[in-house]
Image (tube, rainbow, N blue to C red; front, side):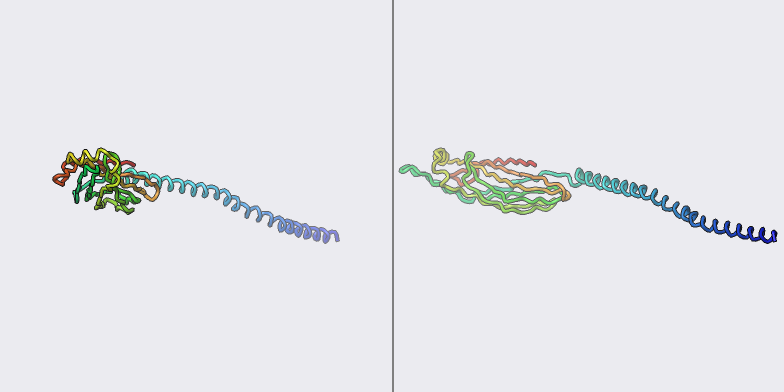
Length: 232
């Protein structure tokens, strides 16, 4: 009978050990499963740093390319205005002594060309051309807004006529008309802007001035001197 009790105790002990191993096993599995989660959390910051570094390098490369293009291919050049011809279309001048009065009619046909040497177009706003006598505007004509394409030129035909009423109070007119030489000047101004790579706006002004001396008796232009100015 003593032998049987010992056998029963041995069986009970084996069952308790098996149960203990069974209870411990889930904890062991949880520990094993927790390891990959820890590795994933370490990889995520590394991936974020790689993405941030790649974006920074890409932005830097794009900026460098834009800078190189802006300083080479798309480098800004000032537009050039040239007076091709000035033709005396009509001139008529008379002086009455009693009462003292001067009657003057002068009409000039001017052809100018604005050349755009840039790789992008120039958009210019409403501008004007004027006829001047000793610094005073005595006639003008508007130049409508428009656009000049890249590496292109635009020709403009303008007609300037003197407004006689603007000279009635100027005593110097009488002496110039009587002498037969009437000095005038034409002034053309074109204002616009150039947009480089759709990022930068550069405002430009191109002007041309021609100093003329009109031979009233022979109805022709005796002297002509033109000069130009461009600024941005």
